[in-house]
Every structure is written in C-alpha cells, then in structure tokens.
Image (cartoon, rainbow, N blue to C red):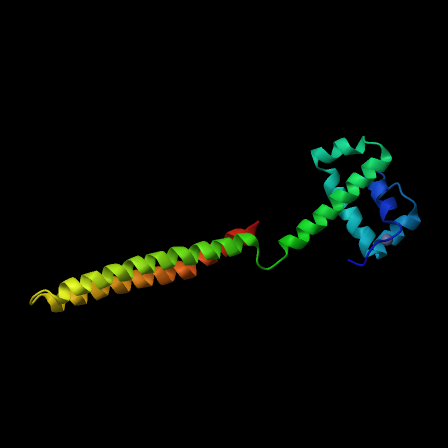
Length: 163
Ligand SMILES: [Zn+2]
C-alpha cells in the first residue's frame, strides 16, 4: 500500500450512500480510475456493501459509521494479505501432524520388524524364508510410510490452496 489518499473517504462515502459510480462528481471518478488506493477502497466497499451485516452500519451516525467502515476495510486488507502468504498456519500444522503420524508408523513397524527378525533368526530351518517374508512386509510398511509422507502434505496443500 502507498499510505493514504485524501479522496479515500469521499469514495467510501459515495459507495456507502449508493452514489458510486454513477452519481459522483466526475473529478472523483477520474481520480479513482488513476489512484490505486481509491480504486481499492471502491472495490472493497462495493463488495462489503453486499454483506447483510454491513447494511445495518449504513444507518449508523456518519462519524461512527465511517470509523466502522475504515476498520472493516483494514480487516479485509489484512485478511487478503494473510491469505496470500505461501505457507499458512494450517499447512504447518498439517505437515507437523503428518510427520508425527509417519514417524509413529515407521517406529511401530521397525519395532515389529526387529522383534520378528530376532524371533525368526533364533528359530530353526524356516528362518531363511521367514526373514525373506518379514523383510518383504517391512519394505511394504516402509513404502506405505513414505507415500504417507509425500501424499498427505500434498493433499493438505491442495485442500488449503483451494479456498
Ligand atoms: Zn485517491
């Protein structure tokens, strides 16, 4: 943002009073078409005006109504800035949960693998095929854990990115 513009509140008032854009002074319209701040205010205010909640505030006294509007516009801008950040808190949480879950799966499977290995290794002649089968299952569990590590963050990313 480039700070503030002295026509900002005039544009806002025109939108609130439903004079924007047809029934305002042509100077103001020309200014807004070349001013990023006023164009932004007009766009946001028109969008806000469509909210049912906002309609009530139009009936408020001019001064408190204006303060309310400026607060709403600021909140919208902040929200838009927050939404455009590449990594959101939801994504960080999703990734952390996924890492923890994958770690738990891997830890459990490796513990199981180790105990199976010890049991089979101390066993008799069937140890050879037993170890082969066990390592096959261990490998499958490892592949499952790896695919969870890759797929879940991708799913979280898509889900968060879509809204
Ligand atoms: Zn301006």
